[in-house]
Length: 153
Image (cartoon, rainbow, N blue to C red; front, top):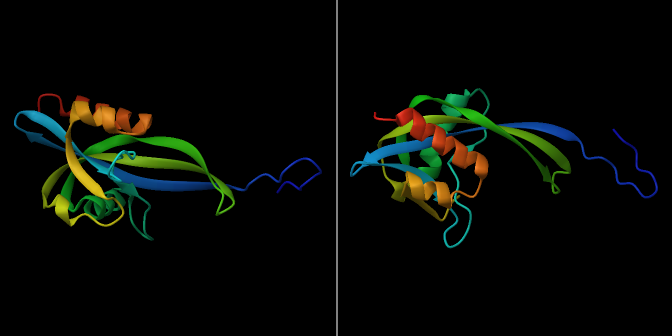
């Protein structure tokens, strides 16, 4: 660990974090839609995702997090890919390199009204509108990948 010198701050320790989530899609009135989670109002919309619990696989994590954050029961169609980014947590005094693994999913039951309190609002977006609403470029990429994989299905 770096030592602090006059005029220099101590380097933050480096941590690795992993999450998993889903791009949940449905065909509605002949248009593909995707579920997004948001704080309500003008905040950033995002895909449902979260951290694994001990002993969970990435797929199990994605299924649980999507169920909790959206209120939907879902099934995995296939892995989509992953995104990696860096962030700093001042409160934890660490820099993180985080990788989020995404799965293409479809709903099998449940209701958006049953989403947890982590987000103020969860709703279906037409794919084109979702690409504009999503706050993160890498998540827009995941939605585009999902749309490519869905193709004419």
